Structures are given as structure tokens and as C-alpha cells.
Amino acid sequence: MYKGIMEKKRVFFNELSSIEFFDAIKEERYRILKTLKSDHRSIVKLIQFRGKSYIYKVPLEKNTRKWQRFLSLFRGSEAQREFKNLEKILENGFDTPKPYFACEIKKFGMVVDSYIIMEYINGNAGDINSLPFITDTLSKIHKKGYIHGDSQLSNFILTNDKCYIIDAKFNKSIFGKIAQAYEFIYLETSCGQDIGQFYNKKGIVYLIARGIDNYLILWGRFRAWIKSLIRGEKNISSSDTSKENFIDKFKNKISKKKFSQSFSKVFKKKENQNENKENDETKSNNQEELK
Image (cartoon, rainbow, N blue to C red; front, top):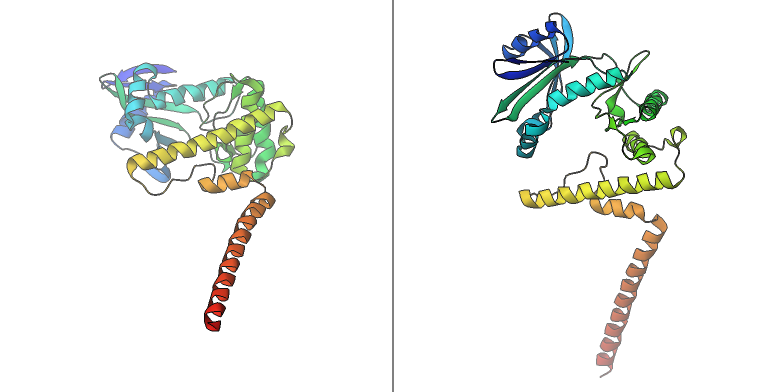
């Protein structure tokens, strides 16, 4: 990776020809083929420049949040970090989009804007049918001592003969087998069905990883609830990994049998109370008629 300064902006590139992207983005000398993603977190576009297709990504959330801007004083922009990550993944023998160019704009030493240009992979997002290839790739990452960092189905792209990994943090696995088991649990959640045939779901390692997963889900919902109170929102937003509401999450932890039994007792008790009340009223009316 090469570094440089262009018009008081820090740039990162893998070859001298990639510098052309600086003026192309600045002057908008490219064609937008498709907007792949556009939300509060990032904007991802498929663009065409000099007859070739590329991915143009702007990490909006990391560029604009105050805390992230402060952290950029010490670690640089999200675009720069992703550029380095992609290079590291390629150096370790895995398939991922090739990074071409990244740029960051700073004010008072803090990053206020950044973007990255990378290779476009013309393939299909991971699905249930491609699980053998995806789980094999994930296992190879773990054997190298790394973790993906966001191992959901959509972060694997399949071509005819390759499995590309995208949006990967690709950090060293500090927690070893527990972190590896958690990555398979996270992948399983994105599949929406059991994939136990591809990893070991027995033993203490799996139980710890499953406990961590449950904790993170509940913690995420609690944070969302706090944020909704601060913002004055009435509804709690759903998490990315589940569409169930907070109460449903607890219901699923209890067997349907126990759940129905506990509530049937309550309703039965209520019905008995109502029947006794009606009988008392009937007796009272009969006594009045006799009088």
C-alpha cells in the first residue's frame, strides 16, 4: 500500500494508476450503474470508470459520528482500515475484493469524510445451497488464527470456483475456539435454520459461545430500548439478527408446554372466581324474591 497527500487529503493506493480515481470521484467522472446500499451506516454504489466496474463505498456512520471522529485521531479513517484489511486478507491467501484507492479528509486531525474504491466481484451472495463452500472457507480462516468478524451469509460472495469474503474485520482470534464457535452460531442465525452438520454443537465450548450470543442479543435490545427512550420513540427497533420482539425472546426460552400451563392456571382461577361471583349473585337474588 502506498500513501500520499493530494490537495491536503490523505490517499492510499495499491498502484500509481489508481491515483486517477481521486480526480474521477472529485469531478464525478464516473457512471453510477446501481446503488447497492444506502442507509445511515454506509452508501455502496456500483460505478463504471474507463469501461470497468468498481465498488464505491462511503462509511457514513463512521465519518459523521462524534465518537468515531475522535477515535480517528488515533486510528485513521474507516476507509483506510478497510483498505488495509483487504490487503491483509489477500496476503493470507483468501479471496476478497482488491482495494484500489482510499481517501480521507481531516479537520483538526479528525476524519470528517472518507471513501474507498475496490474491485467489483460479479457473483452471487451466499445462500443455503452454498453453505458447504462458506463453512469450508470460514474453517480455513479459523485455522489461520483469524476470525471473519461478521460471518453472516450475505458477507460471502460465490463465483463459479471461488468464495469471496467481504465486510470482514479479519482480526486475530483472541478467544480461540469460543470465538470460532460463535462465528458459526452467527452464521446459523443468518441462515434461519439449523446448520449443525457443519460444526460441533456439543461440549462446553459451544455452550459458552451460545451463552455469549444470547447475552449480546439481550444487551443489544436493552441498548435499543435506552436509545428509544432518549430519542422519545415509542417503538423499540428490531435487531439485525431477529425480528421477534423483546417479550417473544423470553417466551422462546420457555417451553410451550410450561408457558401454556402457567397461563391456563391463571385463566382457570379467574374463571372460577367469576363463577363463584355469579353463584353468590344468584343466591342473593333468590333470597330477595322469597322475601
